[in-house]
Image (tube, rainbow, N blue to C red; front, side, top):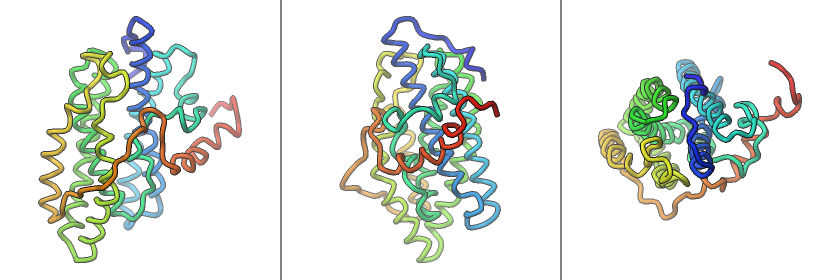
Amino acid sequence: MSASTTAVPAGDLVRTAFAGYLLGLADDSLILAQRLGEWVTRAPQIEEDIALANIALDLLGQARTLLACAGKVEGLGRDEDDLAFLRDEREFRNVQLVEIPNGDFAVTMARQLIFSGYQYELYRALLTSTDPMLAGLAAKAVKEVAYHRDHAVQWVRRLGDGTDESHTRMQTGLDHTWPYVEELFERAPGVAALPRIAADPASLRPAWDSFIGTVIAEATLTIPQPTWRARGGRAGYHTEYLGHLLPEMQYLHRAHPGASW
């Protein structure tokens, strides 16, 4: 889906809000794609090398479309490469969940369950967006994310209802990632200015709760009750981990400015 098919909103405030919304969605996918790529050659079995690489490529494809569209909407002459590789940490708008380290395989699967469950509800909601690009992207991405979610579900059930060791690790993975859940469903800055275009994150929570709660119960696990919660990613406040991830992701582009690949 080309960014040229997006409907650029009239008015500076709405344009700014729409560009920010697109960047948030794009950065979520871009940063998680980078994280999942770190599993290649390191996953517990070769099939997982391939599966996680394919999920990362799906997310990267989503990010490219969204970044190109965001560049057009903001009107500053930046393309998808500029936005991916030439922004600094405070300019990224992703939720903090996607930037945390992979941890062991159970932590990664907990993060995948949480995030793919959220993305599935997000893209279902965006199917009816009045923006042609978002609606078109959602029609493709919801099919991809359905697989991402199913992949995570299968592993969470397998590990949670497996051996004592796998059960403990899977519960620990959920405990580690659960403080980042609430941020997914906070209303992002500017969403109120985008009726019928954007999806209100809070409206996605009931369906997410129902689905994820069922999976956790089937896996004989317990929904964590964290004592703290992440916040601020959409406003550019991130964990220290993003500061370490970006130099690796951006090095080649910055080392050879203006290069044509």
